[in-house]
Amino acid sequence: MIIHVTRQNSNYLPDPHHIFVLCPRFTSLRDSYSQRLKSAVLTILDTYHLTEQDRSFIIERVFNLFSDSNAWPSCRSGFYLGILPRLVPPPLTASIMHSRLAPVTLEEGVAYSGRGQASGPRIVVSGGSVPA
Image (cartoon, rainbow, N blue to C red; front, side):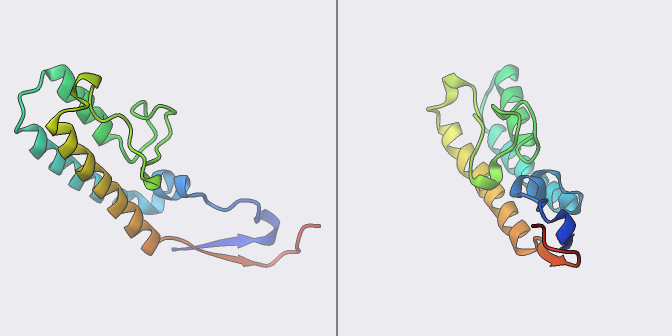
């Protein structure tokens, strides 16, 4: 993907948040990795007897990993920085299930952002005058 930027609007360059969370050009790639993550996490969750409330808590966070949502403390996704939101309710933080969920979730986030960077935007600045 090539993003053309003229010198008149060169103050705007897409930041990683825009590219990985908001950019419509990455929707299909984002959806593909999100689906892979959902499948892997549901497989893990199916091996545990969780309350519906705990299962819903986990699913909400994992299914919204690649988007801005209430799953994130600031309501702004940060997975592309290697940051994860709280994936499980506090009583389950030290559980084996959490130690299985976190690496899978992080791995898919890193795989998506790595793939996004590989096919990511090249920024071409052209035309106009250089601001004084």
